[in-house]
Length: 251
Image 1 (cartoon, rainbow, N blue to C red):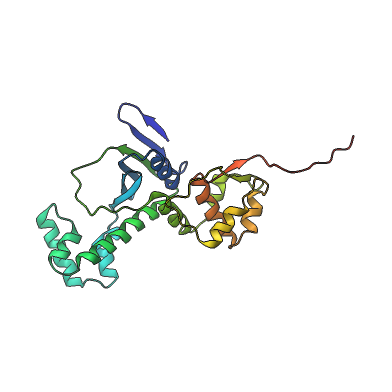
Image 2 (cartoon, rainbow, N blue to C red):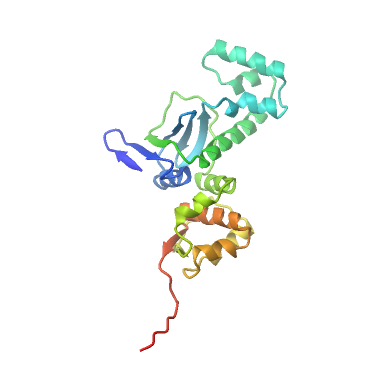
């Protein structure tokens, strides 16, 4: 990512710097602001505060809360249609608030559904192999929405687990012979690994090559690759020179 000092606006290309790595960098500095991800067909915004994700929006109609609730059978077609009409009339209210006012859903259900919607919007961008990403620091007080507190580091772990194609992730870490080591005093706060993922982390010892870790880890190769990438993006493991290897030399 490059930065523009006059506007404090960060810009990058998602083909060069995937969203997980962008989010980890923002989290590192605990900066509030908005991440904008753009490709020709859609734009998605991720709102950050104190380094954590608090909301997300999308121009893709399939990501809308009303569509999700309708598909999940939580509201009827008639309720959805009525909420759309009232949404256009209000001009400011969000569809979820309107559905609560209509008593189509309970406030508790709204919060749960919004959390799932935000997570899916964020994770969907993890799959993007093209598009631009930018970060505008600052709090936008004009935005009215349910504020969540989704730890960014855990979002990275969970989102990477859902990525369909692990091959691009492997390329981000190096080649088959690349050696990985654990970062000293690594920060595991706000991070929950499964027992298998913990084993994969412990296998990283500064001696095993990337290929070996992927092929002989505790999970299927694709899943091993995903967790290794997540650990790498979170700066819990890093590329290093192999150590402890004895070489015989004939004199």
